[in-house]
Length: 348
Image 1 (cartoon, helix red, strand yellow):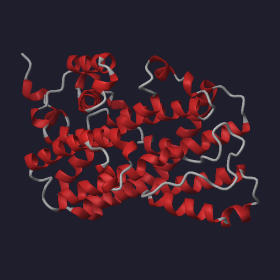
Image 2: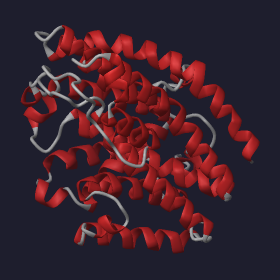
Image 3: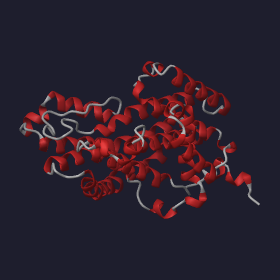
């Protein structure tokens, strides 16, 4: 007989036995894969987009990230329930690799620029890019003369557009926790449902909280992931249900299925793959968490390879850039990210 209690998300999400790290790696790889098409001006050849114009692998990867982020960040607050440990964990996770990625981007972009190094480094656009991008609060995506002849010119690290959105959502979770809203599960769940409804009906309210309306789907998936944590003790995790959700995502018309229904179906599928014991690959967790490094270092490296080899196909670019990215992400994780994440315990 199946023990229904043992199949609840709240039980399965305990401990470290899950596919979160694997899903993040896959999500980051999806984004890189999509950009191999977009940056070579072959984005209409991207396989998922050709199947369904409402999808592409880049959006899919970003959506996976936001579901997981909403779930884990809300979990993080409820486990510590104090602002300093919560904020320090977010800062130590985001900023070390991001600052390195800014330096990495400036170096690769500078090598592609027609400007001499002194002029490039002292250009106001370079200083503006370094300051704003490293803050993660606002995005700058151009550097003087960088990648000017590429099919997607001047853009140096477009992947980072998600970080300001995510950082703001972290801040709002922290503020909700600071006023004891997160600790009151049903009050917070009600507030999230209200936020979902308002986001769907009046997306312009996002501008009032400094979030671009174009990020609505990301916000929706983050808050649905957060809600999933709050109702974890009553949410069964079933692979057949996840399969039904996947089928529904493809057969439901876009004008019906791209609202809360999409958020619920997609988030359920992601969390089922993350936590159901029958699909877990625990060996992957023994590797480093390279997904964030892959995400923040990929774009300028792809632009550099395209600049040097403009005739490459998207497939050739992907097969070339992924080993390089994994190598860079490994050095970043083991040399900087993991050691600094070890400092989290000092803030508890």
